[in-house]
Image (tube, rainbow, N blue to C red; front, side):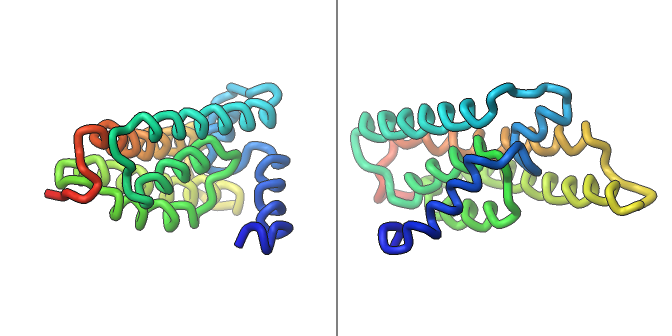
Length: 175
């Protein structure tokens, strides 16, 4: 599909490459904490390539191939974590893959921890945005930055637990 509709796909990636740090990204959170990353476009591109190459190397070294949902989830975690924006629909991309990628019931604890960080983030963004609408309440920038970083920790922790358990588990066996 991407080959047939290349212009549409490329437009999405081009916008992500060219945009500045925006809501929900680690880069925006860091900027709210007065930690500005020089040459963000270059850092974003190099970090993305490095993490995707690392993922491929990791997957090739596994004794068996994980299911497609796990591979897609890991790729999306990289994309959504190092991207320059975190759009609300990303959780809708990640969650179904995460549920399919679960290998055992012990991983549910980390899954629900991650989901709690997502809920916290989604409450935080609306409270942060309230400050821009003459509201008498709202979440200050530091609180929003903290919620963003907690969300990133949540999804990365979940991905790490899944990856940690892959070499010792069969992709077909579930408990």
